[in-house]
Image 1 (tube, rainbow, N blue to C red):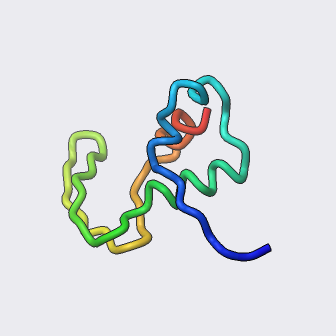
Image 2: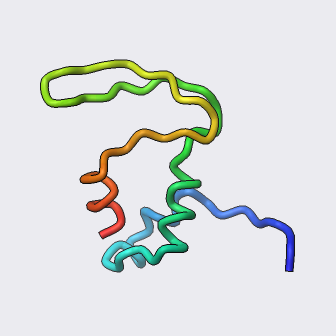
Length: 72
């Protein structure tokens, strides 16, 4: 089987799935969904330090603690 299909990024915020931890496959799809689809600037905080970073298409910026919380 080959091809592709569109999935709304909102599926990861749907209340029906909020209590379940993500499987490996769902975590991979989550990473793809959260990646930048066009270049943009993001504000990143590290303790008291704040910086602005440019993300290119396909990049994302999340801490391990954020991923642990998001993926349960």
